[in-house]
Amino acid sequence: MTPIECGIVRLESRHLAAMARLEKKCFAEPWSLDMLEEGLAAPAGMALGMMREGELCAYALLLVVAGQAELLRIATDSACRRQGIGRALLRACLERLEQCGCRELFLEVRESNAAARALYESEGFEQVGRRPGYYVLPKEDALILRRAL
Ligand SMILES: CC(C)(COP(=O)(O)OP(=O)(O)OC[C@H]1O[C@@H](n2cnc3c(N)ncnc32)[C@H](O)[C@@H]1OP(=O)(O)O)[C@@H](O)C(=O)NCCC(=O)NCCS
Image (cartoon, rainbow, N blue to C red; front, side):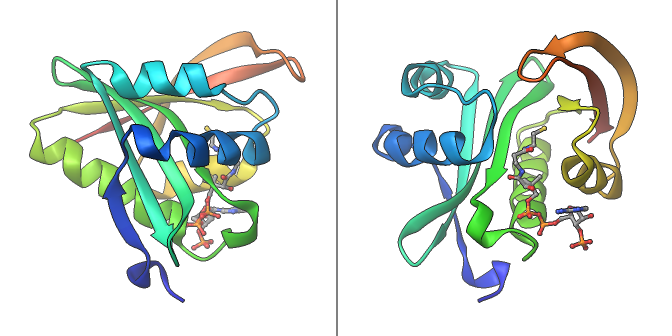
């Protein structure tokens, strides 16, 4: 099944449990259901997901404020990686942000996260800063990336 055969959906509160399941599978420091709920309920919050055979296989959570957006979370289920899903989801986010007049997108990434960094770099993100010791488990710097829209 190609990413084209996966459907992009706007995520709502009924998807929270599936988002929290992906968090636990994908991150060393997963967001709790409450944190996700807060992000989703925020007026500036936007979340998109990829559905495959009725299951959430990837999701992205963003904050959009005054023409600037921040990508807070993006993850693909480990069973579905390297199939173009993360890229398709990121592109869908970029498209929606452009449609709503957003001018730039920022994100933070672990310096050692080669997979995510390769994805971001190939989609036009550039490093604009660094937060020393930002991550805890394990302790590591965050790189701040930006992409103009
Ligand atoms: C980063 C992540 C979302 C990518 O999702 P994915 O669905 O596997 O991504 P894609 O299949 O669309 O791959 C897109 C590109 O990412 C890069 N990439 C993905 N996995 C990679 C890996 N294991 N090693 C190196 N590059 C990789 C490649 O450039 C790839 O393009 P290519 O397949 O044309 O070479 C996924 O690895 C993930 O969920 N990781 C855990 C959570 C995470 O780290 N999120 C980012 C936090 S900042």
